Image (cartoon, rainbow, N blue to C red; front, side, top):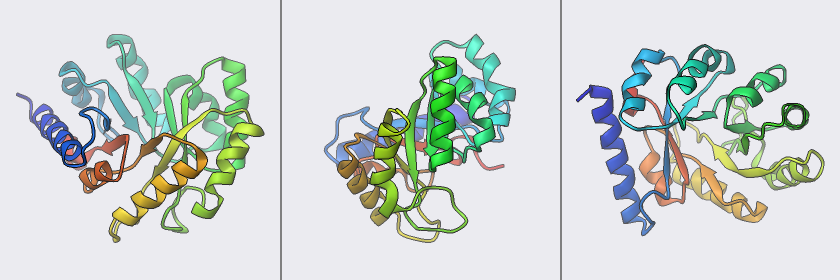
Length: 220
């Protein structure tokens, strides 16, 4: 078995164990395999092993890799998990099935315009900067619920859930708990949280999807 596929299976087993430990149904936390910086031939074995849900950080990198893979393999679901610039909204709506990084008014307006123009409706998440880190994308926690409301009412966007990336040097648990609380207040059912170092903790706090890259593909 390919080493990458082996690691994929280990991650899936650990997610299933975390679901059991949390008293959650198997499959209630979906694995988004993060393929940023990895070439199509490195991703191929994972697709051939049956995995279909992937995450990319940059629109441009994804454009060079995924259109051909989507044509070759049926059922691929592609998530944008990196910051979205407003001038890339057109390309993002055309390529991605899920955009997890809606975090400001300008992006919401551009996405609404492109969704109307293209007739393609990617599922949308609002990114919350749970640690209020100045260098990190995401809306401030105190503004998140009102922003979700504006996305819906002002821009006509169907927001599906919330996403966060906790500060690297902090216990992620309180950040995951905060995201879950904000989602409840906003009436949202989906939580994208947890990465290679903390995805089992995220499952315990109710993650409906976890974004795992290096634990599957190794580090660049």
